[in-house]
Length: 258
Image (cartoon, rainbow, N blue to C red):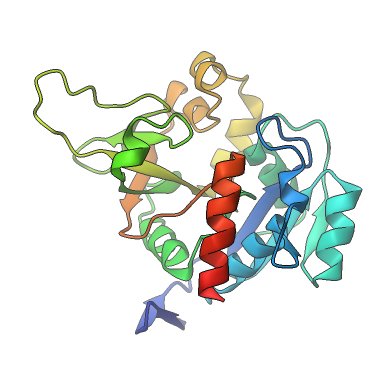
């Protein structure tokens, strides 16, 4: 089976018949740095709805589901005709919320798009799907060259990979450390993942890891338990809405896109 995808003005034919791909957008109401951000409106639509519509722009997905623990988010998303369902309020991470959805929605690959990433575009989904054609990859994610302002920004997560594209570490700190002024390349991690179902099953059996707890980065649970994360590079940055400054920046960008 061949699928047609129009990305950045290019017509692409992608063979992905061997994979059923479902995207899940975890969206919880509780948020420490920017309270109730999933319901913050941008030009008449809640943030969660912007993310859903951005993900829906990809033709490579069999389904897109918002997974929430909030009746307020459920109601707001229903008003905008989003596919949304309630999940447990006991989950410790977005990946655990994706896992709950996977128990009733069958797929080969589950794409996890964080609910505060409204600038996700179809080309991001395409790069991730292409990465997961590698059957050796249990988990996949994306990186993009870090802008100068992001290198020292703790809200912009950095990723370091080995020569085969597997993640060595994710950090809010500036990694690698440029001790001798060699000017290494810095890469920002984008908040989008793909998991094969067996590794979702494994993830939820593992306790929160010490590195995950220290950095507040759930992907470190995979690495600390020896589960490789493969990383594809994209030229297109995104903006995770973690602060009021992020929110105002996204609002302006989305207004210009409209």
